[in-house]
Length: 358
Image 1 (cartoon, one colour):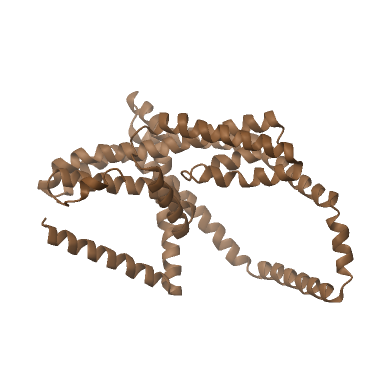
Image 2 (cartoon, rainbow, N blue to C red; image 1 turned 30 degrees about the vertical axis):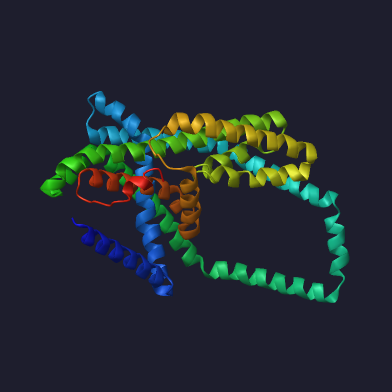
């Protein structure tokens, strides 16, 4: 492929992306894209995520001579049992700690006599009128929820169907994942076969390292902050650590976002708790950046930290947490694919060597 064709293809790709962006500004197209994201893209992403998380366990069963369909079913059954046990055991504690956190905030409000201030202000006629309008609006909203019970039911059914679709995708990936390489090589053009055959294991390694690595990083961070919360006496330690675990799947910025609620709680408790929490945050962030991430991820992703920040922040701004989670491996895969094709002399870009470190 000559340079002119590459430039033409890049121009077409940019125009296509711009056209999709502009179409997204129109209500109907925007809603259509949202439905596609929720109904098709999101289940596939979660299915691939679960596949790589469960693949090591599934491989153990296959190596013991079990058929792929039975090993996939057994892997999913064990996972479902463990997940149900975790929800059953920890769910109650999370609810209790959520109630405790609410009580702490209400006690702070009462301690600062905000309720008395509110009672004094309510004597004002205009404020009373505003509150009356607010109450009317709340009642109308409740009535709307009752009358739109069908919409709520439809959303519940969509959630159920999405969960079922994720399970099915994960099952088929566990059962047939080892055949994907042969299927791709079967349909790819002959002159690209050698390059793609070398490329596929590297792509699999990137996805596996990233997904399993992010899960381990999230679990490590949650464990560190949970132990730290217990030591410094932070209320609702399990709930706050669980929040860290969920948000830590978003690379780089997730951990910072997860510390917002703990800092609010520490502000309510007092200055000493703020100092303790700050020390805990510095220790956890240092261990994450210097020990956990380098040890788990290694040099597989090979992305500069500044590029990582821009990718995650930009992805979150465009498509929310789901895109923020996916944008880093997508960028790494595209970078790897372009590099492999350039090294194979299928594509020649003079300045590519200058951007290998990006």
